[in-house]
Length: 205
Image (tube, helix red, strand yellow):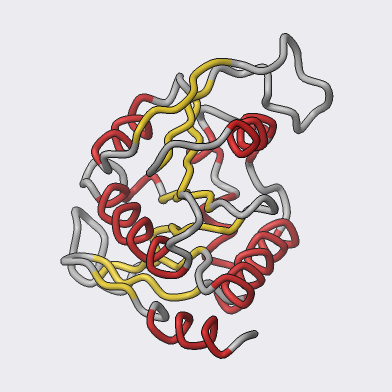
């Protein structure tokens, strides 16, 4: 890791909002992470994305750790700082953050446990994650993909004042069990994307 990347990691090792604490995901979080990512309710709009093993969750965390080492930011564990609904302070409610993509753009994302839905926490976590990604690599555009059939997530991205840069499906049918390019989706970004970058984001599905 370069000295500059190390300094950035130190700057954003802990993100706070009024109600949330976000800290870097590590393998110590794998059980809590799998509890959220293995819950079918969190994948209502994309059932095939559900984690079916603890190993899948461990791999996802390791990818986030790599993004943080190489680019200064990754995905974070999201923990409550105060009671929300029936949830107590200190509760792990999911993850949020951004990972750098192979073509030098950020992919912003989040996933929260169903018990945490309906309180505005997703938007709170997404906003501070957007700010951290911009701080870590201001030259890299921040992008976010969402299924058109998931209106709650669409509203979160719209409230971040990201621009809708593409909407549609890029294939007529899936090419394999993990392909999602046939589903209608929306792509948001914090700035205009050049054609090459936009095509690369569309190809992600």
